[in-house]
Length: 253
Image 1 (cartoon, one colour):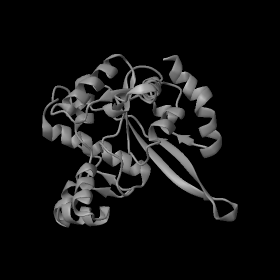
Image 2 (image 1 turned 60 degrees about the horizontal axis):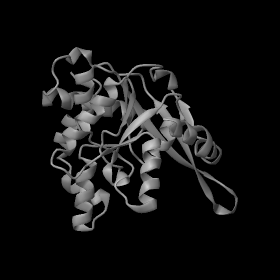
Image 3 (image 1 turned 45 degrees about the vertical axis):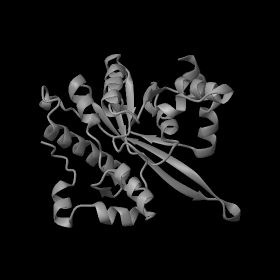
Image 4 (image 1 turned 120 degrees about the horizontal axis):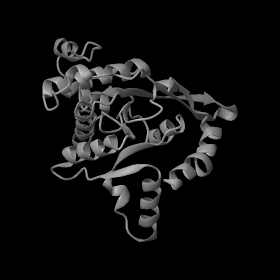
């Protein structure tokens, strides 16, 4: 616990603020106490650094188990760093990976903490916003906690001699209340509808183009066919008329 605050206010936080000047909007939408889900788009490996720096409370993220399984001195330091930085390991290779992640997230929420989650399940392969997975909806329904949509926005500022430096903005949207669906956890149609509503709010905050395909599926297609993200999406995305029917809307019900 102490290491988290050391990283945030001493070791990493000050340097990140000086170099990247992250700005935050809507921080008043993050509950001052109690459990909540912070559901964000995922554009960079540094997302989990910039978002927690924007708010006072500690945020716990679910991280891939590989960060915690290294050996030797390097493995020890890596485990210590990610554990101290508020990361909880999830084995994404097991058959029960999705359910294990949901149960771990539920435990964090039932402890009254903030859970940071990326509904896309992976970093965007091309900067667009991809289809969300329904785990975020399952956790919201089973705990009754609000979901705060979050948008990570990156831009580049030109410097002398042709150099550029990244600038970061973190936008927090109004909390989403899904109490109207109480008792419907496990209903995949309801969970799909809730997830789409969350993705719509993230899309509105970020200004990203929405793609109705899972990002992980696009990445697999890119690897298998050595194609670009655009080519993979063109192959995988449903027809225009069908995609329009499935695009997320604010009216999740």
